[in-house]
Length: 291
Image (cartoon, rainbow, N blue to C red; front, side):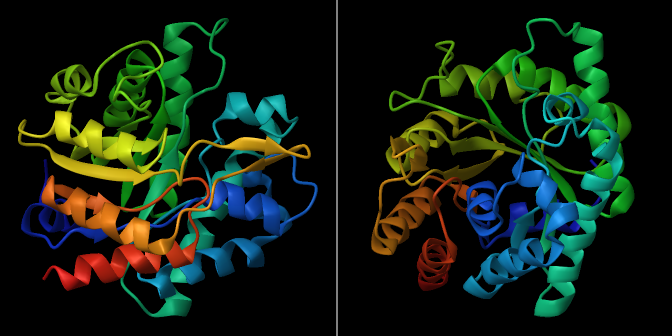
């Protein structure tokens, strides 16, 4: 892997604090979006201000608002014609937030799974991931977060596709249940073995069944020499009055999680759905305290 500031920081430390759950926050900030990524065009200032609030809370890595912005998922919302604009704008807005805040943060191009892939040929899957990665890199992403994958095979396809078109570092993240297994029953340890030679800079857990699940997963993933990343949900979502609601975990709980994650060797520590700047500030404080 070529010399790279992000890769260097992973190996030399201290841990990098990530951001929180952009998608959920964007959706609550901007009414009537078909998908959170549409905000990049419809409400760019809302996206910038969310990025800035995470940076001010202490995040040193922010993710572009592109998790569901592959062409296939956008097509389900009749937005496929905006594919390029949505992905380009996302990087531009993250860079704007970096400039506004005056802090030298990493910008990670977020790439999520394709959604229900029953009728998509494997070659086509690869193309969809490669196409999104190409736009994100072209606009100036520093690395990729290939994240929230439930299926290890699909994650492997995505990593391989991105590797084909880019030499930027990749953080590969799976989603685990409370027993540190994916929905298909793959353990975190098996996932780490499979990804060890895939050319990624870090592996880990995001989204999933909450803080403990992420800690269990990275504990199993450790020991293979790859950097680890943990960006969990606050906990499992539930429905209340037609809205998705995340349980309230106190920032202190996140500070404790961050300290544990660091002891287990995590080099990137952040949050996913339900996590706001106050949880990220708690993670920041825990990481700083340990220095």
